[in-house]
Image (spheres, helix red, strand yellow):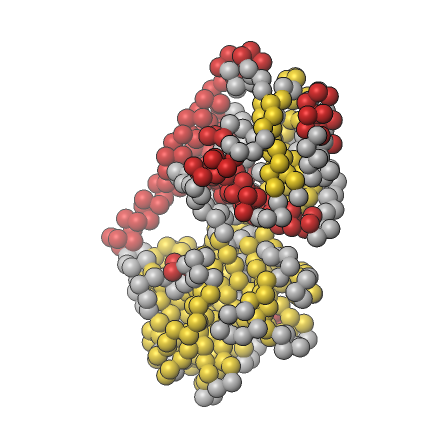
Length: 551
């Protein structure tokens, strides 16, 4: 597949753009056949100081624009962009690719491409043109490649058109921030939608912006793969009823500054409160209930009592010798690291709690399962950059490493599911790039053996890119002959804000479909701000939920 890129000066390419170039160069089915650069110089260049000053004066928002630019520089010091690729090597490879210079006519915010430039491009017989430069594009250049010009709008174009990317979602406290991949048309941010994805916002505009830029990489390659499989079917953008968002005016930026620095101050106070008074922030605890979660009344549940300076999360029930145990993440605030602990359920409490796995890296999400007469534990250990499975030597607290997989990758919250035909599946989340929104991608693999030596990836991996539903929140369970996947709703700028129950409607190596039938919020007890995990087994269920602060 021949790809052209409307590209800026090579040295100005951001990390996420370099990752796209690197991904294309590494894929033998793809070729960067042409680089298209802005050939306008002198007075015709939109980047001259004179033209930028004219644009600023014309905006009638000088104070807001200057204050916004100043704050952006401050936040960029807090959240420095780091390269996850070898920039020098990529630029050397780009220098070997054909380059043409084009000189579109600038009219306001439009770049209108003339027939001469279009003919230059058409000679290269491109399948796709990726837009990483120029303003709003007009002219026959929109039809100069077989599948058009693909461009990112770093927002949900049904809610937010304009920019700056990531700012208004934070300023307006929107539950999530979107990314729209579109095939360009003459309508601003209203092209044909190729795909959308959604991510949890950060409290910093700059960090939110970085997250969604990095997120764009996976969305692009997922849809290039779909195009190669004959699944290219962009849809028309629906009605847009909000204003066109622009650089914030003075009042809006002052409001944002109050929000930003209040958050910074709050984090400082939280550290002092914890150190001086022992107050635990974002303190997770467990709740045990009888019956089915989908029929439960959560306000009747009582939280387990926690030792000081710990929180407990990610619980899994396991029956051993007619006793029900709960394996869970035991996080110690002093070490800022989790270990795996276990306790026996007795009258809705945990007794005989012991540590079962403690490493020099963080552990959580202890999915425990049995095969034949052996017991295995598959905890989350992304800090060790791989997936690990342990085999039980003596229950519950003696384990030895059995096998590993995904070496060098950040993978979390993995579990197995055996379907009705006894096919084994692995569901796992990944963080595929530096500064990518944490684990917003769901991957599925067919498992041919539990030693993980032969994993067959799902055709559409990642099957979901969406922080609202992607991240696993416990193992699949059955209810009334249907199967359900619990997942985290990472929204509202909060990790694990709520718990989704997703009904799995299709599962094969070629297809995956699920539908969210319920999102449960932590409103059942005063002081809770999040809940993100459910495990159901043996007529019992256990969930976790977090207090904003707890002594």
